Image 1: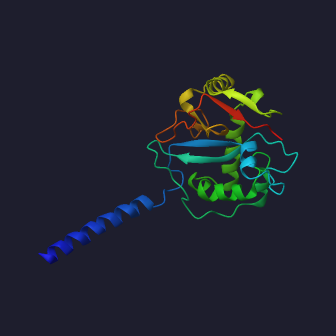
Image 2: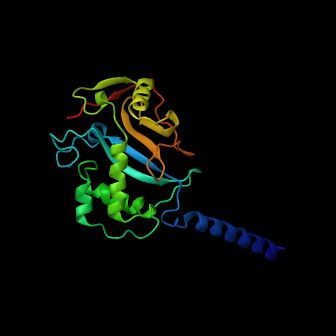
Image 3: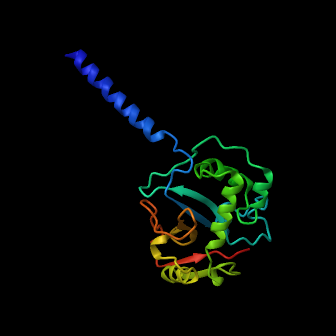
Amino acid sequence: MRIGILISILLAAGVITATAQRRQAPTAPGKFDYYLLSLSWSPQYCTDMGDDPQDPQCAPGRRYGFVVHGLWPQNQDGNNPRTCSPAPRMDPQTANSMLDVMPSEQLIVHEWGSHGTCSGLAPGDFFKLTRAAFEKLKIPAKYQRPGANLTVPVPQFRQLLVEANPGLKPEDFTIYCDDTYLREVRVCLDKSLNFRACGTRVRDACRIDTMLLRAVK
């Protein structure tokens, strides 16, 4: 009887281990459904970081508005790949070429290792695509570099973003905010960078009626 129970336990443990290994197995580069472009509102990030003058993103006079947080391969079912292969060495020129829209070399290196390796692209091509995605999304002029804090009705922000981007639909993007402030906008794009509906788990995270945009400094 005890032997039978022990065998059952070992078999169950084997199934659990095998399942865990399948879940943790890295996805082959290029095997994903679409991209999620994440744009961070830089003034909010800098406030969170204490407006550190040594941070290249937050130094006085930088005046960043929306900056690239990342371009993330996604799957429709919400099971999204990360670190799909050892990260090939990135040419320093590639990192330097992105600093105007992604103003942190540390972030660039991190994003390449965690997400770029899943794209199936070489580093240079991945960051060219990232820039093209950033340039595709048009930010309404009033929200690009406000010199004072703005009180913004969330429905108005959504509507103006749709109007500024032909082909963009409400289901193609999400807004992230806390109880008061805008933090990120995330946009779903197919592999040719056309707007498309977001998949499972990409859900709006701004449940307030009015949000504040911190001023660009």
